View 1 (spheres, rainbow, N blue to C red):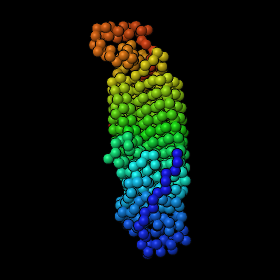
View 2: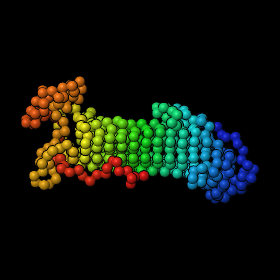
View 3: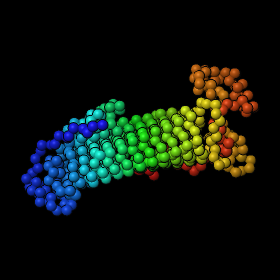
Length: 431
């Protein structure tokens, strides 16, 4: 991927008094320089010394700003210093290390996805950048973290360009090949994906809230990282984890996902624990996901609790609660797959079992699927026969003669009561 063309620098002049003040402050260490509304930020950056703080007043400033030295740009606490882009290129392009952008409103980037237009673009040299407590509104991409180490994107409100179709929008935050980058406590809405991470590692995405997106979090080829304590509401997919390994996906919430709350496609050797999913076509989709620890998750009120397919193997699935899903498990295959571990299985709200010894474990195994389920998944047109006498005979026969049951998921130690897991609908304690 090539660098985008250099940003066009704004032509507004810095007032002579301000320019003189900047020049005098250039030799001092970490001076705080007041910049009046309407001044050329590009000329203020050029005149400032490394480490200076440019304190912006309330008002509007021309965008398409390039920052090529360590500086802090800071606005008033109410974020009333507005940096307005030209609807072409990047509103702020950071090319130096140790730059901080704080308490600003950043708007109107260009709309070219190939040129990586963004409200804030952190270039490969922008190591240890901090973007915090900003309103980043009506841009193609909100924040594009393109290769620097250990960037921090924290506590921003990021809203995409709602005039564009979803497929034309950029992501709230994009992370590419940026080890150690953290995206924390942001409110992200109306983009394509909330956070999209590609070819990265050792990242932390925590405490974010996502709404009106395609995917809340989208992982591609991102290893040794963590997604925790986030909330996804009314998105197509909550957390799409693909081709990524050795992850921690913990204590996230997915509410009313149109397709899937959690999706794992070739995601391996990971811990998926304490997540709460409620509503949607599928709570969880496991596709060729192997050697994961899937435990203590609450999956509720979905069309399918877990769709488990494509040779997923070596997963320990235990201590989860499957509550009021139309189908608790969809598994199309002939292998027998055990979903208990160490004598402890999962809770199933439709399991009418007994516990005569009072140990909290049902006395009989739970099988979520039978012969009729297998037929319907292979031949959906057979659904018209669901209420026929023939289907009733098959259901009765397999209940009387367990040897007739097909291969599939079996929980040999189902729990009698749901474990104390978080309720997806209770998000008041979340950010």
